Length: 98
Image (spheres, one colour):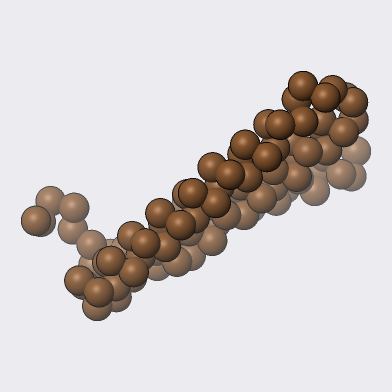
């Protein structure tokens, strides 16, 4: 495994472990998701450059567009929960309560 592949794999794994183990605040979960998306974007872009495939070069841009939509939806949900609950702590959110 090359050092470049190792760095992107470790960045993805760190983001995944942060999302799994450090879920105190909604903002930290969103930042871990953004780290995952960023590592996937860079890995896909480098893979398309290494393969020199012009048909595959649109996939990283599509992933980046979906990542931006996910980030905006996540921030909107965080603002809405901060306004209604007063905090963004995930332990205070009860999904069974209306």
